Image 1 (tube, helix red, strand yellow):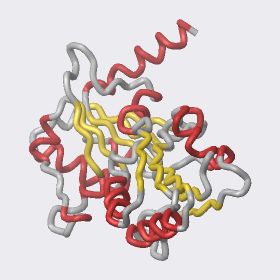
Image 2 (tube, rainbow, N blue to C red):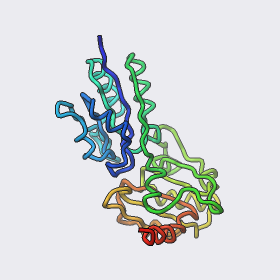
Image 3 (cartoon, rainbow, N blue to C red):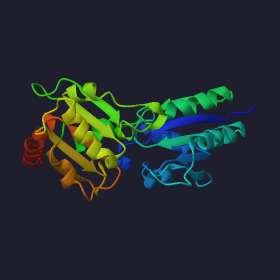
Length: 255
């Protein structure tokens, strides 16, 4: 009897301590771990010594990295061989993680699937920088967008998904993941669609890690301030950014 199955595990936003206990236990029973570049490498230590560890990280803008179809094929191949396959994905698998595509591939092959959610970087990374995505009297809603889709509107967007800038500009808090290279387009489009050029912006580089760096500015000047920022980075647009200093000071005083 083939007992192979796929376990989709969210690794959390960066710090390996932010994986869930259930996610850690899944790793401990893995025969194969397919991990991406945003999953902290220390998490691989939870897998048994016999477990095969396969790097399927997709580096932005670089050729030769695994394609999604190849990853899907690997998942199916190992599960069909009777192995417990853990697919370890940064953040949460269903927040721009293409986890749904991997589950569909497994289901089509008749493979049992388990999903273990992860802490999404969309909320956790701003939080670790003392920026709440909502705050009473400041922001009652937030929106999360893929910065990959913020490419020049004249060019084809990945997967055909363009951002509706009229919606993005109206959100009290707007969060962009994956694609700090698109920051100039993001700032320009937000202003063009009605957001004040003085709106506060934070760019959080390598969030939830010891190397975290936070650059704060406005839509008007944030591009110049972030000339040396490299991915991964999370972009937060909204007045909640202005709460950072007060919340950070409160945390220091409490400590």
